[in-house]
Length: 285
Image (cartoon, rainbow, N blue to C red; front, side):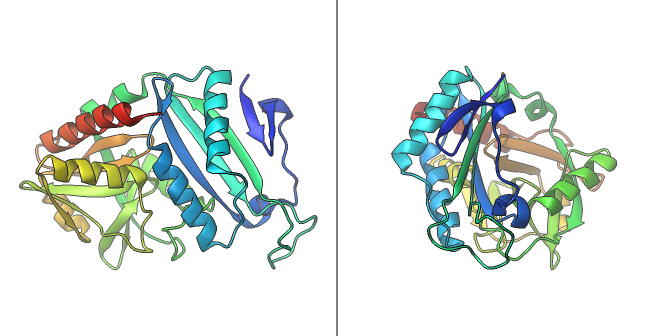
């Protein structure tokens, strides 16, 4: 049985509770982060904490504890749950004001802090990296502040189910004729030696893995162009891939039934995955 963390206490998952008046439950008034664990160490932890602070600030939400305390909690959960490879989910909500109200509660309402682990043995050796993903395109119907990592994930969940119904692995969301991102990942295409991915704005999540992968790509003398692209352009690309904290770099081999390039994972995505895993493990804490 997993040990989880709720508001200062380590508890068996069956004993962990949050109030029905918590604003995360009633209003999706919360943010989250997911940090990967490889070899018992945290990947890109610092980046996730920086983004957490940004999300909290954008929503005028209180910070639940210090960064040092968050690191201690993460490490304690890895130890208690004997996580070798997997993920740690962290969620902060505006807390429990004691009743339901659209207005934010008073400043003395304590935020709710919850963390739990997910064990994923062999995560870095995912078979999907060898065969590639198939995606469909769907209209992006999310709210306008996708740069804030909120817990309101209903439409991305619906997108995952649309993809599953179509016999595919994921969906790329499209707005005004251009791809924004995947349901839980950033989207990329490769044309020639150029990696193309949408520029940062309120339209997409500022991916921690995205930032690292683009940095490694530039260090490896790969050309990077940050701009929007269409599904048609993606279908004509040499390669396509996604990045996220849980998939690292994952090739995409088909979009809306059209094979990308050779229809098999390409060399750029494979090399970037290799570099990312190698460098991230070196820097893991």
